[in-house]
Length: 233
Image (cartoon, rainbow, N blue to C red):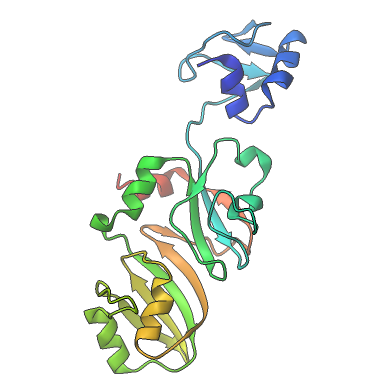
């Protein structure tokens, strides 16, 4: 990998800025000052320092976001703010994208990463990854609703959902666990049993649980053990 690309990918500045730093003798590779940034390095073997700080190679980024309502789960949108607008510029460098979608008015756990393999595994219908939601609904749920969710309900387009778990937490507040990610699925499932979702929040995706210390709009990078658990290691 070219040195300037490596440093740019690690959020150290534009290639032009990095070239200027090299001229100022601020960049070292394996303890040797380098003046040209088009040289090739092995990011996993060579030690790169910028202004006295070792720059560690990080090919992937994994971000847990507490998504607020009002943001689109996309990398770009001509009309609305996206979840990437909540990230600081240095955290956009590796080009993370949302894993799956939360509706614009839905809050809660959203994973952003540039690890395409992990994203594929988490979204694959064959993996049966559980997603847990807290929903405020218009009417109290019934035992018939719980049984219907357990058996799968027929959505407005005729699709029969896979079995889901429905549990009452409080008056008109429920926990829903699904293993699919159909468009507006949780809302449409409640519509199928003549109820409506007034508020929806995702708490869990696979092994990843929303950090209770994250306020709406806040995020943090995943810890190593959280990443390994998501990958089933």
